[in-house]
Length: 159
Image 1 (cartoon, helix red, strand yellow):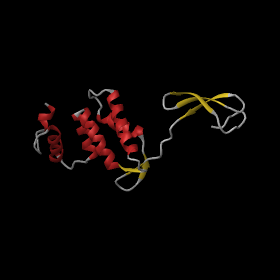
Image 2 (cartoon, helix red, strand yellow; image 1 turned 135 degrees about the vertical axis):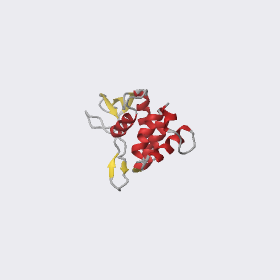
Image 3 (cartoon, one colour; image 1 turned 90 degrees about the vertical axis):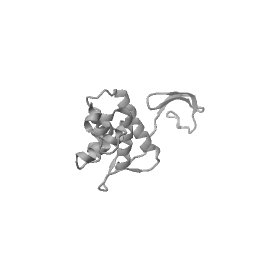
Image 4 (cartoon, one colour; image 1 turned 90 degrees about the horizontal axis):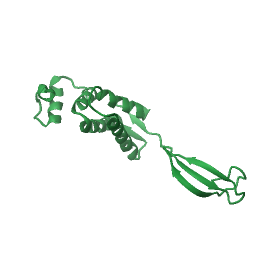
């Protein structure tokens, strides 16, 4: 790290402390003796989401969070649980180490997280995400979720 006072190239790290999303380092210049502080933060690589129609758009954590919140609306799901689900999906997306992820892959991952949180939230998201053509397809998804045979009774899950 270059000293901001004398422009010497090598500074010595005296201490490091982690903050919220950054690392604070206290440094000293061996040439002029001045001390200074730097804040280092990780810059994530850009991640593109490839849509069904081939369009690409930047990954948007807030959009992901809103869709999970809508699915969980008026359900007994804690805000911390929603935040954890969003973080899990985001970490998995960036963890792949690829520049692009398919929206279908993200959607399936959201379904896995919602399946852990709440069955009704799962069905809400799945009904929009999978675009069920009719009630029979929706009943089949509910049957799979509740462990019944395909075509299970919707009232049994609600009751």
